[in-house]
Image: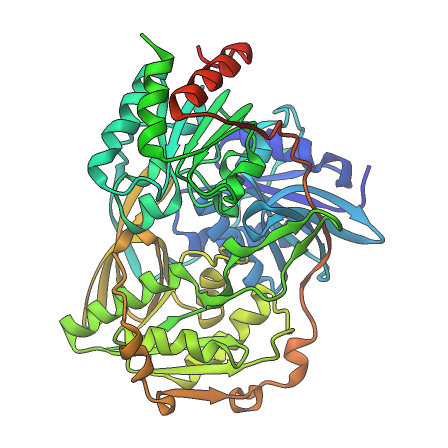
Length: 286
Length: 259
């Protein structure tokens, strides 16, 4: 039994259950659940503020989806209070609520304290996935709808996705070590032999735009945890490391023996990608 | 049309590493740069400038060194930049940053569009855009991957995890843009050098009607950090490419991760 009145904000009841389970040790009395609606984030943020006031909640938690982050960041400003996005865990210490989150792209985990009476948090989806769904909560009274902002929704379309790296068992990923777009075919050939999905580093997707962003591994891309992760010509910037550090086995091939990627790897080969790639393909056999 | 773009001066986080002896982050002597995501925002503003004859102003909070970042962004095609200078050691949370930025925007009124990058490479908080919009009482569209604007209105595609939402709205409004929206132009070193210093105006807190205490009361503070343990085998495989490949495959078979 904790000391904080908790409000959770999520679209799916399963997510609400996970958030409630996560917050239960801190909660005083029952946890209140405000179901996320489909109104604009501006209105949803007003709803969170109103529901928090009605329930007397001082800890407000949502999943760190894109919309969740936007709504909660806006709500925290409406409430003039601190906000931590992408939290990995929360606790109470010395009368303050604290939350841990990745800093500098995941090389370290920072422990943050709220200096404001009310704390607004979003919980990293990767951290939520490991929490049981059985947390108990009761529904919040529906707040009155806030007036709409000066905009309208023209249409909503589902994104056509060809790959979900978060579920892949094997991933062959490449970075700037691949010099030309045409050379991706050699990476694809290796991936095909291994039955692996194709991943890439941030520059490949965001700067060169050689692959759609759903192939990007890293803090602004997919957070993956395959059995086997092969990093080809990826130097191993922190931003990439954060996306693949939970892989079971990590293999790195890079021509620079000082590349940081080797520190994160179980097996490393220092060599020219254009020589190692065909050799690997052959060694795997049919 | 007047477009304001928020630009952050950040340390190059790809240079941060852990000192193996002390198990602490090495944060000194890192090079600094413009936040990559803000380049996409500057690029989008410059495109609208060419299309609609807009004026583009950049705003930033940072140490003196941030002038370098702003010169680079001006060289991309912005008209002028404004820097609220703070000490290099000054830590600011998203509530403080959005407060200062909101005062900067108010000083630059009338403003039709405010563009921000979707996230900063150092903090990864994804809060500043939403907080700034809330402080200014403006509608907001986040994670924008496509944008068209005209006098008084805009249309933007916001790309979320599984859906793309097309939103039409009236200005003034705030938009945060994704890296997928464009490929930022690269100004040459000479173009950056040619940006005259008087295009970067420096403001102090009191110019914005703020007291120094605005920097003293954060809503969130970092108590400390830990370095997660990385238990990796770190086996370096030697030999010719063919030998190394064979050895690797043997290891991977032993690990039972091949199928």
